[in-house]
Length: 266
Image (cartoon, rainbow, N blue to C red):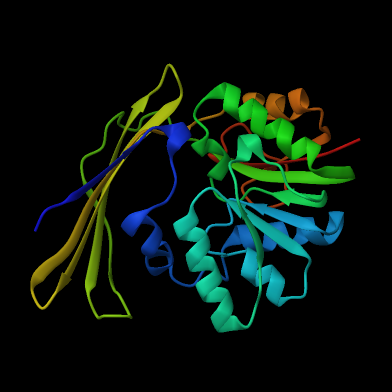
């Protein structure tokens, strides 16, 4: 059994292969994830239509559609979008999705609310591309519309700057009964605020390895301080900028490793 190597740089990254195919499998039921309730509240406050950037397999997109919301999805990965539409068909939903990059976003309508869940924005490791993406978000907002997204620190004081391989999960694939295992490790370029990662996936059936993949993302994600994240919003022209602790509406404090930022278009 040979291992398929998938090597990407940050600006070229997209979920593919087993990384895409097993995304839902390893995360299970996400209906109680805190960000779900946070983004629902943001959409209810600032209105629709809504754009889910980095919608992936439709975790929030399909959830919001099932509640009758007017929401579109965009993602760079054709494999993730295909999985999204497969799930939607089973639910009797017809999502409106686009395969585009954040930094070159060009959609046929504008939105009252744009959400960028998880750490999707931080996958843009080039500062210039990140600034371009913020500009595209601003251009796609209606006046008074809101942009909301979280930021996650890639490293905290006292943590190692390189980790060993760690088992991240073992799940049984329902379609064929294969057992899928995942391992990962990371290392950090602290002066440049970059995280590099490797992931290994292995599927076994009846004691034999049937697929194996090695994904190397170098770099994988860019870290932001709270001040840097706020400045991104200011530079894009957003106002009324608020920063919250994790996925709450409580003000963030300096020690928060996860914080969400919301700003509006004048």
